[in-house]
Image 1 (cartoon, rainbow, N blue to C red):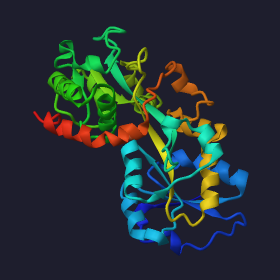
Image 2 (image 1 turned 180 degrees about the horizontal axis):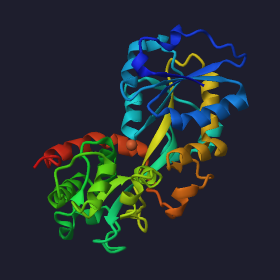
Image 3 (image 1 turned 60 degrees about the vertical axis):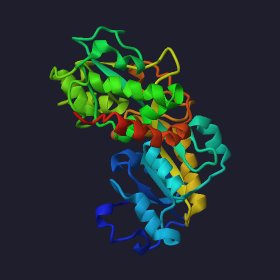
Image 4 (image 1 turned 135 degrees about the horizontal axis):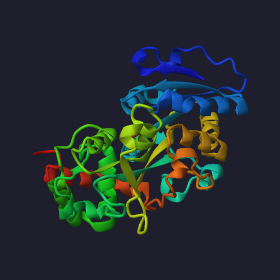
Length: 338
Ligand code: FE
């Protein structure tokens, strides 16, 4: 696999020499980091002989695709978070894929109805509690975060962050806007401090005694446990799979889409199919302590040790559709304000 960072964006893929591989190539725009993709793409190249070229970026890939238009060298986009994925659809930058392989590997609720995106991994948005100050089983649902008993005891990142917006969007789907607005107001009233930092910082805040409860994505916790320096911090919290006994835990996704202009469409679809296969799903999920999107593949290692996740079956497309409403509610209750 050939890699490029978007920092060198001036060197467009189009300017690169054509692949020498007889099987051709496939060009990937990715928000996902190199170390996550490398083992996968190596396996794909080995199996198919198709060469992969990757452009990594932290942001701006949708804008870049738009700018490049029909001349874009990109075949697929790999990204995280349903709202970012949906943005590609709304800007009309991607096309549908109708593949029996993808349709059978990836469940309905984890793909676009016309195949404009497919989830490759999922991550639970979990509740983390202080092992010292919160009893096991004392909180089991997102709904309970609104309870008075947690007054001054909750930490979260910004309410406007896409991960929180997706969670709030799921609450709108399950309870309606009015209910969710009240819930958001109550959770805000329970915050121990103004929303700040990332998901990992909230776990740190629990370890420091700033708060007793936080919300965060499962892989952050997993990555902290795997990091020698952060493990002692992560070990001070207990993870809770919210709503495990009910509708299930809210999950977000990482996914892949075929670009509208894809010059190597057949190879791109081969790559997408490969990434949904059990072999690739195992490698991909493990690299970032995520869950495989293919239900045939069971989580392994650390993630398996956490016990089974019962994911909310709500369509991710519904979550994307509720995004605007969720943003409005966050503004209305001034979640990030004093
Ligand atoms: Fe993240």
